[in-house]
Image (cartoon, rainbow, N blue to C red; front, side, top):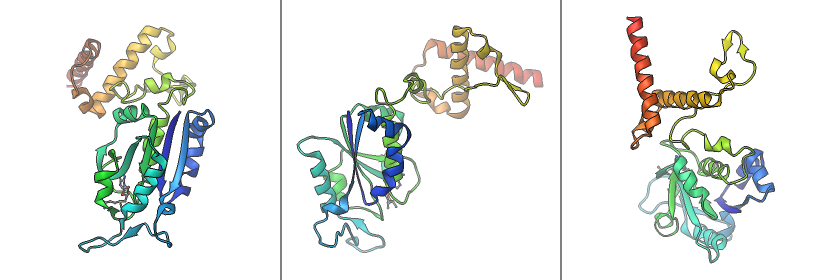
Length: 251
Ligand SMILES: C[S@@+](CC[C@H](N)C(=O)[O-])C[C@H]1O[C@@H](n2cnc3c(N)ncnc32)[C@H](O)[C@@H]1O
């Protein structure tokens, strides 16, 4: 079982996401245990103050170190969990990191709000800083939900059909191939014949080729990450040849 503690000033934001669909079922199955903690409860002031104005002046409020340190220490106990700070300056999040975090037993997420955090939280408390993209959100809650969702779905038994995670985009290093379901013809648009052929090996080859086609068109950077398997190289050469031929036909 993986233990996930979330420190936030807005615990109610997590109710729907953690208790619905696959995350809700993963809790019921005992695959994951969530604890959502309002770090205002760890404030040392009687008014529950968690932020203050920045030293040196300027706008915005800064989250104070004491409540966040105390809350993390309370949930960590003697254990040494990964303590993850959600922030736009962090490491860009990707599937590889989701896989890395999915192997941990205990994760603690800190969701910021307002202008920022006291720098000592970054320096002396957290083990990782994660950004979910080059844009700025009002708070770390949505970002933490994105990371938590992607980590929990990788836990063994979390998805009904495990093979659907294995073939997902990025897991294989490629974008996923196109899917079709019934009807075989819809408004005159037909499902590719090969998918109706029942020929398993040909279908697998078609899927790999379509994955490569899609990745080459939309995310060519994914194909530049090292030596490609021979089968991929052969299919990419086929795609290039087909493109050349269709180009010369239209001339
Ligand atoms: C308004 S933002 C603070 C931005 C900060 N002043 C800066 O420029 O880096 C408030 C909080 O939202 C969260 N946040 C915003 N954008 C994020 C992103 N792209 N990825 C992860 N967390 C983000 C962080 O927890 C952050 O502390």
